[in-house]
Length: 290
Image (cartoon, rainbow, N blue to C red; front, side, top):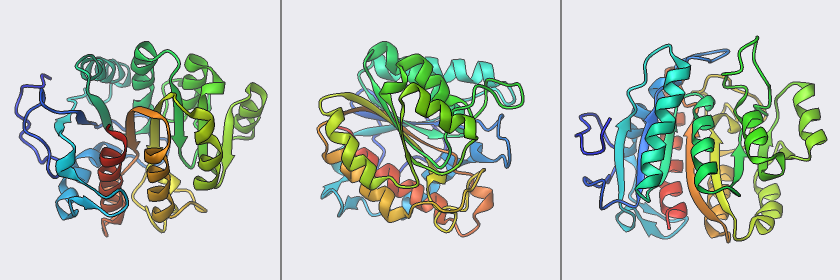
């Protein structure tokens, strides 16, 4: 897929028509091949774009307008259905091009495994990069039922690549006992249940650092985001996630990329999950693209 190819589908509201003139690139990763419960997140990127038409272009949270950021919607990477290995390679190649062009990559998933190749690209570009991981689940397994390429494993892979001291998890409320023990044993930062207050504690420690942010929509309580593959009771509100995005925007960190994953539209006929996700994308663009 070339950046100069016209994307025939819907684009995120106020997407800039020219890749070269853009500061950021939105791209979709329509992959849910390793979903362990309910598949369907491969349809998330397209639907997040479609419902963005209902957004106001102005953010009262950040006092910025989408016209203040030039971003290009590259559409979905044409991943080969059912082939996770090749799909991950294609994501890595695609993001490598975005980074080489000096653009801010903002990915839409898709299952959470899609973050793994992005971690690899960012680590090559920014060897000391830190990851802020906002999620209901630890994602610290080595494998799921014998398969190391699983949406249950990307944060374990990040720890092994970047060093566990450079991975910070927030909102976690689900995982195997062994995963929580692993985090403890290796000295990884893992905040259970909450996001905003732990972020306030951690962000000053990341001052001046390059940071990548990965957000799994299931960090929200199912009351706020039922449209996801592995919904988990006891989560945060949409308001708290918006506050977290604003906190990161106002912190002295250099956000070098981000993704929002695991939106599965079929499980939310009310569209509240997709609508919330599109609003989070707006805030990520306005707050994190400098």
